[in-house]
Image (cartoon, rainbow, N blue to C red; front, side):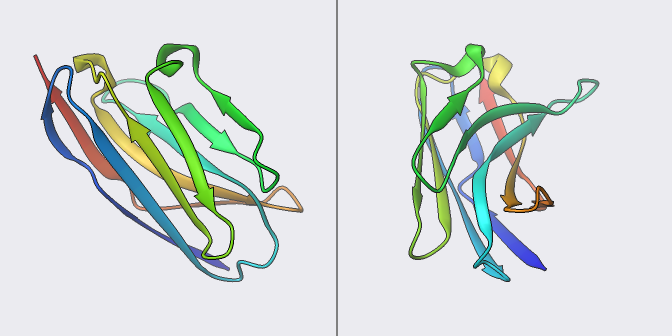
Length: 116
């Protein structure tokens, strides 16, 4: 079992920045991919960005050039730096990890609100 704890959400004005952090604990040895999804009210959950243990990254088209993702493999942490935030980025951001067998684990989520 993997447990995830997120931090760093909040309220920011459009054009501002936030940095989300997520720390994994428990059965972390088999973690492969780490990343973030988001879900806005009335919308489906969508992938924001993820990063493999080897450092390969993947981003949603809507955040390319504005968001970066990084991870600390030694401490099983993943970070999402969000710049040039837009009101449409408002959502609950959920940290997730995928183990080597494809199992997903989810955090509780952290609210990001971008005001116009």
